[in-house]
Length: 83
Image (cartoon, rainbow, N blue to C red; front, side):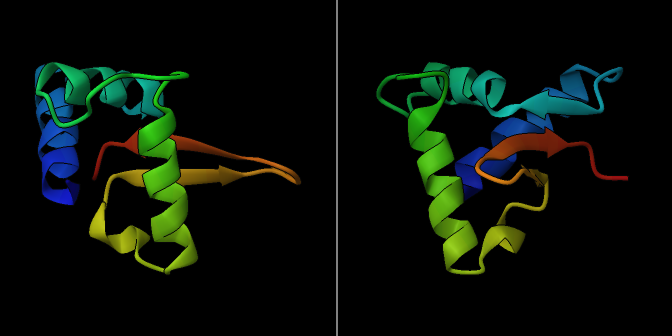
């Protein structure tokens, strides 16, 4: 699934050259279209859960586009264009 996420994010940024960052729910919709996710529950819940798991396991570097914006209680997940 991680490879599919990377492909989807890379494709998104190639097709949207003016975008520099995108919320997780946008990529979740793309993954749904590509049948990587079976449904887009709660604006990308399954994708957010995967990102949280990778974060706990210190494996976020497997998705180089991911950017966690950490607040006191929550983490907001974004994907950023690589420069």
